[in-house]
Length: 352
Image (cartoon, rainbow, N blue to C red):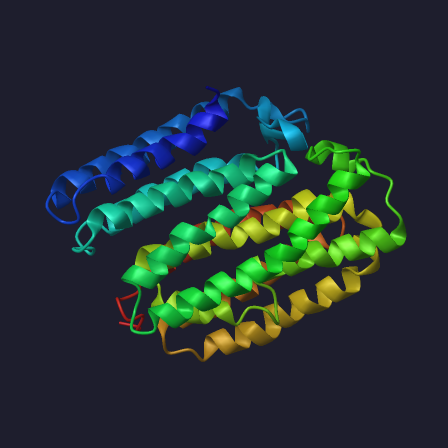
């Protein structure tokens, strides 16, 4: 098993082990297993730093084996400069969340810790996937543990927030699935991302693909005006859920723009850059002003996250190296900022 598979499946394995424990009878043991699992999962990602070659843009630590032979779907993993930092960052944030929930969570501790570890592995899978269908499976699977985290350990309106989160993100992703199937047919039956990047697509096809991907990734970022689910989810989610949501899950959408929208539909991306830039500026200015008047700490974190991610999408669609590099740095820095902000929130999300 390669390093990337270890990074993905180690936390998932520990999460499944935790789910086998009784609900609250072994809470102390569960906490220690969760801590060991998160630390081991983070340690597994550290060799990536020493083995990563910064002098090439090619995928590294590649793993490829047949998954669904009938449809030519591969278990294909790889890492490049776009995804490199997010693997270790995801694992590190999980360690912080486990420690932060050490004494806070007193009921269903095994399920709480197990859900976060499984979520960690699935998010790492999104950043490592080099097969379109594998990416989609990981991308959608992340909804399940986060939905449960919000719906079980959330606040008074947790059911409403959980359904809103699930429906918003799921409906947007259905259009992406259609786009993936179209690319599969146009490439002669391949889900390989590198093959899709080289497809000669017409302007009309690129436009349709661009907006199909936009529907999935803009909601996930989230961009204005499809950001309204985030404040509700932030307020109702437990503190650990808010931290992971802000620090990592929002980055899945921004990463999707880089991995799919820009290289697969470059002409459409340039044509509609004005729209992306306009929506990004509105998020930075208008949503930033909305964040300034919030009295609820979690709503402040939510609205400021929308504004900060506006800088990320703005950097992507000005189409220069400095803009993209700055956006990537902003994504990583934003993870640290929102992780600290979420951990400072009280159970109800009020400013102390």
